[in-house]
Length: 502
Image (cartoon, rainbow, N blue to C red; front, side, top):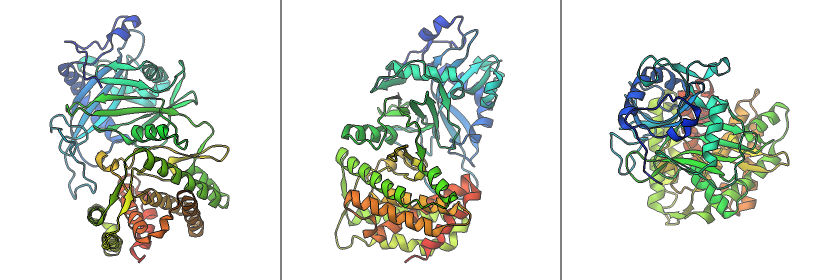
């Protein structure tokens, strides 16, 4: 990726004519970027912590450091402007226990410029629309009115809500090349003039759908290094796996820390028109009192096919006794930290630890087990079923709270299986009355389908499966306590079962 960036002495945030916009688009100088972000800090302090994708909830924000600011569309006298920002959000630790999942510092990063580190703060991607006045249709996108600095007197808003700016972003993807620190690439043909609409579903990133033909995932919290949401679908496409939509275009940025790595910012893939996500399908089946085992078995086969293709496309390793013990130790540490953060978990810690203790001694005989790249956050909501009944797997980002290096680490495939088994339980628990029999049948059918397609039954090593299910349930408790307290009883029900399951 090119690290060259076009800069100027003063920011060209307002231009005289639309014709000048394209030529003027470029990166702001460091001084101009600091002036811009400093003037918007009061707006960011109020707006950013309220965003679903902001990972630092509960910790006071102490500052905003611009890492790169690029004008994708300078504002004209009669139209909107679009600013692309990479901003490091500095935060102070909240009173009380530390977070259960610590971040790690990328190699070569420094505290002043690092992206996505505990010491340097998290790096976020923002796309800001700028107008003199916001039309009523965009009222919900309002961030605020700038009272000072380069945008004084202008209205700043979430640019992805604006169809004109969303179309501009697609147009950039149609024309590969560099724009300041940004680089746009594509692997297929993209038509012009597709209207974009922002999906309003709760998620840790933002997604734009263009004309029911493509979906662009905008990664909000970004890290240096190959991102699984681009890396794995590209590898699967090269392997000929059709269970995962192949990337059509993407854009990245050079790591501001100078590590030489890229930051993946967005991935465009085909939009599977008419498909329904597995979570909604499962809830619909529960509501109608209908069995879901046929779908669960087919989903198990699809998961196995993805795992087989990933093992063929990317390097695999063998976990020996020491690696398995380290895996168990990491799970135990996450349990202890989660119990400190969510005290209701504390009484179950001794029982839950037995799952990790059993895993730690599983390889004392010296027999290793294969590990490979996996999805990392597989559940019903990460799957789509087409009208003809074919399952696809999407969203290979992994658990967003985990460090990127951990998400890219080879894991036993049973990790994904455990995530899906927990998802069936989630669906059954969210239905009134609770249907444990429905969940049990789905879990069995899913494992049957997986075993049929892969030749390996995930239930053959119950200690391994229980450890990963327990680790996932602990993660769910921490997540729900932080983001959706009303849902906490769902994973806590699994915690009670797993704590007593020997």
